[in-house]
Image (tube, rainbow, N blue to C red):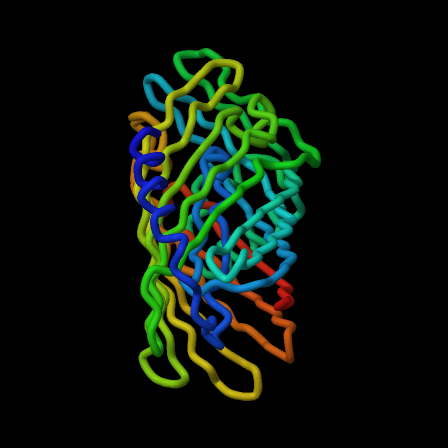
Length: 322
């Protein structure tokens, strides 16, 4: 955490540099990793370096099945999570962008197990043991050495709230480099699986680079310094690295297509569980329709490493530029 605050102090030195005009591209698809035991640890979404004034509403739905045990850990996750996220961005005094993320989480057994079972059977794909449990039956329990850490409860609750500052450092025609720092406030209930009960912080570098007039790339790289999981017992989380690469292609008539790859290192202490100890990678495919100040995004996210991520995330976002 001390490393973060030293870096944040360096970032403040750049706040007197004015912003340039933001790119006409609307930025990458801002999809959070909704893996149940990771989502509370300040999960970083891919963001553009250019600053903007905007307000957006996102609906993300995910399905997770992980039932694994080791000599020390028991991880039982069988659920669907829906996140309703309000996101507000505002440029303050032509100098710095202020961000607010306000999530509402709906956690429960869901409704998609029957469809997923048919999908796996049709294409001969493994279901990782999902078929051995009743369809749409909620399960969320984490134990260490038999001691209960998280006893997840289905329901609706406010998640951890994120505040961020973003400052472009270098701007030129088709190129923007920014630095971003954030904190995540412990609002969600840690014992029931809606938060971690501790303050989290993150710091990242953001890069936008136009390749042609119709193609732009987005690159993010950073580190997150999560607090402890303060459930029924306390678990120390590890600092972790995260990053991503996105490509947006303008197809004309307000339509664009996006491909993104996001990844992060492990967060939990060594568990000897494949679904937790390995790096996580998300592949995101989507499109955007822009009309005037309004933007409509639709995307599908796949877990390509079967570790630290939901089986899939479906996201729908409406954004209006202010």
